[in-house]
Amino acid sequence: MPQHKSPLKRMGTDKKRAARNNYVKRTIRTLTKEIQMNPENRAEQLNKLYAQLDKAAKNGVIHKRTASRRKARLAAFVNKQESK
View (tube, rainbow, N blue to C red):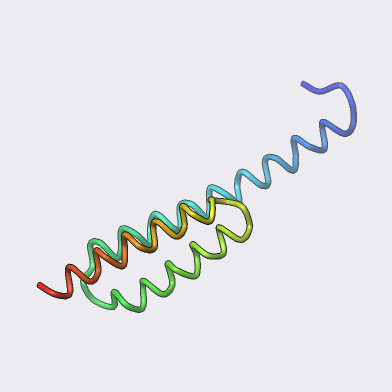
């Protein structure tokens, strides 16, 4: 446990950021699973997921290349499913 004031404050901000990051990652996982499991409204859900991934990358929750890679893989998945 920190003895000084500044590290104590840092612990509080770390908890808040971790909670926010976990929420964003959980939202991304949920949207990804919805796209994979539910064939209806995939285009609309894909747009929501793109927005979440871009926002997460912008805020530093995930790396921008990770966001780009996930978007590309999901787009390929959706295109493959629609062509069937």
